[in-house]
Image (cartoon, rainbow, N blue to C red):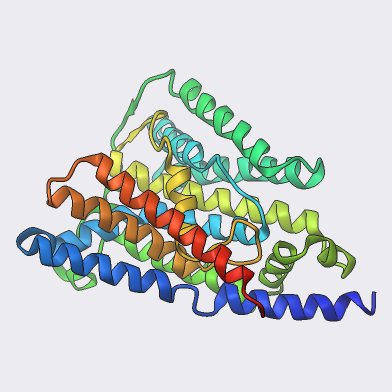
Length: 332
């Protein structure tokens, strides 16, 4: 034990420096460069302030979910059920509103259902030691089926009861905030998760487990409890993203957000997260999500087909992973 603790402290110090240091600088530079390219190519449309607002709004759902996914990936796990959790949340919020529940109760109910799925994922992964990929792959199908069953395989049309205001531009006395409430919720979530990682014992335990799970266990960290907590928190944030998605759609759609988990994971990887665990940046993940939104929006303004957007996004993801692998091979 006396030999293990110093090794964990050194590994944790290095991991924290990588996870919380300047991981977002590279993605930020890439974002500025890509934005400048599209700005130069289509200044009349792309450069409008309202377009910037729209891109930030479109990033809110992916960014909030990516904040939770950052914790999961730093832990050394993965969660493929995010898209299904978002869809299930939209269905739960819509069905509760249709049943006469208040807005607060509907929102809490939707987030609570999503969080419960995270608890179940965490228990299976930590308690039964099943591979996260397998557990969350199964959850992805189960939650999608549950959403379709709850909605009777159709969209649930219901009055949004003001939840659509989450993604609407602010006007009047609140216009000085510039961005819709969903963007400010994203900022608040990002700051909160970053603070959790940097300033709390729980955050240090997450990084320690992702860096070396066995060493963390030998040093007295309750690995199972931390894993369950991380998957629960990540799922709750997916639920919050689902609430904002409902505000965008104003319907409960069980077929919504198919493939969203790939965008979320890609955001974390582009932002400096390592699929090997122990590294990641909340700011980098949000910037990664914004980078993908800029590419999609820029290609649309230039009239380029969807396949070009997909190729560019895929190239950026591969480049991010390759850079991570090369950096990890360097001594020190």
